[in-house]
Length: 308
Length: 105
Image (cartoon, rainbow over all chains, first blue to last red; front, top):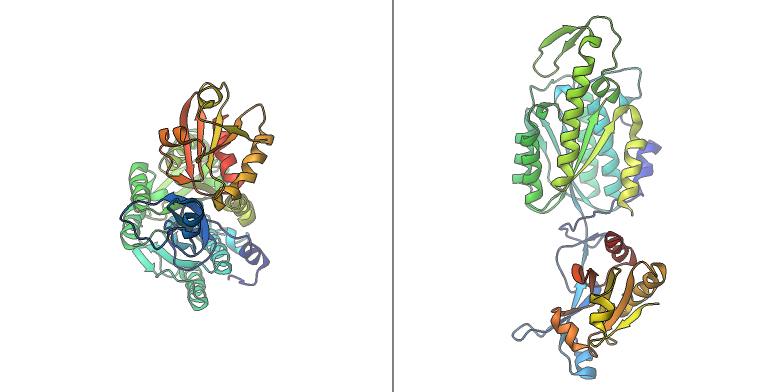
């Protein structure tokens, strides 16, 4: 159960999230616009070209110096953000009931991360949309900044958190969903993805293609790779025989962890290295979100960087 | 203290400089130029000896202004080894100029 009055959620609300990239927006706010409007901050003088509209000529300057210059302004606008959560069954790992709610599963952790982002955006009056991927794109809301819309999104998050286990999702195709989101977003936005990336583990190029699709359309892309490092990276299981069940295709493997640990770690490190290397190459900000680290340790460095 | 570059000395002061050079193209009548003028002065002091930071008045020095196709002011050109490696147009906070400056070091 999410406690929306939880101080850990509220504390991020005022941190503010300033988009690095110029993002198309619609009302006055914190973020830089790709357009030069003629209403806000005076930014530069540009030589007047014959034939241009005379409307924005700096006439005072012309009177003083006989020079014809156009005044250009920097318009500030609000951010449009889309939060995209992977709702596949693999996200239900490790299902550790002894932990705090947000650290019980990767899905819970992702929902809490998204809630923190929403809280932050709400305080900035930014527009937020939410997409959840289960069997395809099961939820895809419009991006709005109204209080009612934020409340609606929070209730959707709450509902997904409560119902995720009652309606187990078939195998998810994250790549297809990312392409679909890229097609459906018509205005430049910040896209924040929360996923364990397991269904693209066999082919990271497909993931990169999908992320490039989003980038190609002018979006800023942030990828939160949610994982449980202890088990998923270190493979830190005791050496008793274990039965490993694939949460998505239900395949079963019975092994002693020690027998495959080195090989597993090597393959996992290779996957992580590929994603870590390729993401920045294509302008995607990659953030490792270890659920054991807790919300603060994952988000505070991120927010701190964004406020630089 | 920012250096004042001129058409005559530009070759020697900027293009043949051993260290990176930042040139702020400005004019007295330009409000945004005055806004970033203070940042340029500060950067000149902060990075003295490491980077040459200076200003070039576009009204008094049309030669360099034309050569580099300066049509907007303020424009900041970042030189390294006599070549323009970065260009910024418009008023920006000091931090944004400093970030680009640090890439030259």
